[in-house]
Image (cartoon, rainbow, N blue to C red):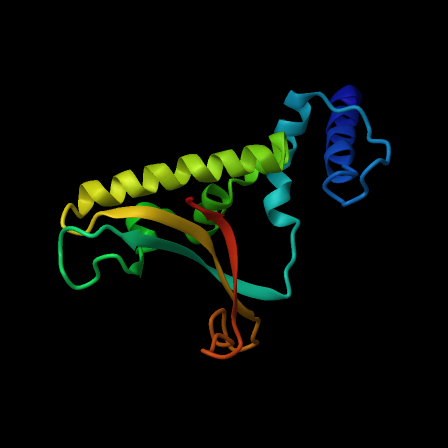
Length: 167
């Protein structure tokens, strides 16, 4: 039992105090095999804090065929149509958090590109009269408010973060 307890403590410490994720490039890290690192990442979703809230955004450029109303325009895709699960799970999927945690930023960017392709294909199957040709993934950010999650969201106090944009 002591060996199991030591493994649990060591695994958590090795993952939590990862110099790369703490922004301490070049600092020494505790040895952590890939499997151990992956095993102890579950607590990561509960350990972050932000001083702002956000809504995830899927923007798509319409093709020049199909319905007339928005040909060639950028439209907002309904998030729930492509990600039907609860908000925290959708964030983990859309942010490609596991790719970032395990393999780094380059893997996360590759995951976003693959995800964008899947979202476009899914949308085009669901809406053949409103096909899309390019996709952007990101967030619409706004200040926190004690009155509720979106209570601080106004037309003038928000900003956007672009995670991925199709070429």
